[in-house]
Amino acid sequence: MADSKDQEQDPRVDRMSVHVRGLLTELGLDLEDPNLRETDRRVSKMYLEMFAGLDEGARPKVTTFPNDENYETMVMERDIPFYSMCSHHLVPFYGHAHIAYVPSERIVGLSKLPRILEFYAKRPQLQERLTEQVVRFMVEELEPQGAMVVIQARHLCVEMRGVKKSGAMTITSAIRGIFHERPIREEFLDLLRKT
Image 1 (cartoon, rainbow, N blue to C red):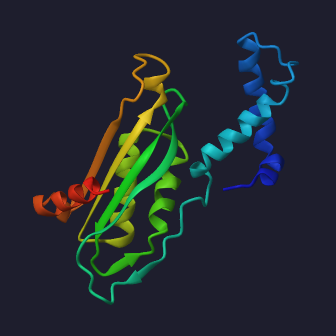
Image 2 (image 1 turned 90 degrees about the vertical axis):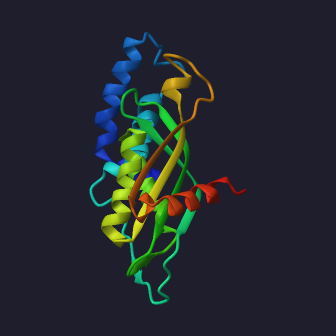
Image 3 (image 1 turned 45 degrees about the vertical axis):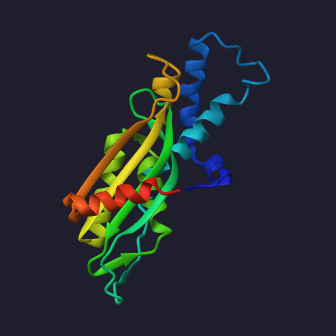
């Protein structure tokens, strides 16, 4: 992800700012107000940060390791926080992901699981698609016996507009391989219930 100095020099900021300024003008806002003077640039830089997953070369490099210990039970990382933007209204949705896999020949460093999630979250997104993209990445990169992803999120497009249901939680899941077997899936769900 580009830092703020890189963003300042990114030519997209100037191009995007023109459009943001137009939107603010159409809303009848006073762009000379001290609180709005640089809003067009701030919003442009924010979108570059929030949509960094679209940048070429942003896909995380996932180093895998041989499963020399022949570990063959579940590896799970739970409660991984994330923020994304709904592709329908460009407002945030946020929550936690729970990612698990049962290794075959390869294992992955645990820090890579949040990076995979972050990569796919940093773009205009649907929660259902995000869930599928993470599990697909796991299967393609690791070729595990199975993988499962559960994402729990609150959507501000549900809470701030439309039906305005504060606190509503959306839960999605994606299952591959051995997780289709009930005992493995139940183990995953039991681990989620533990505090």
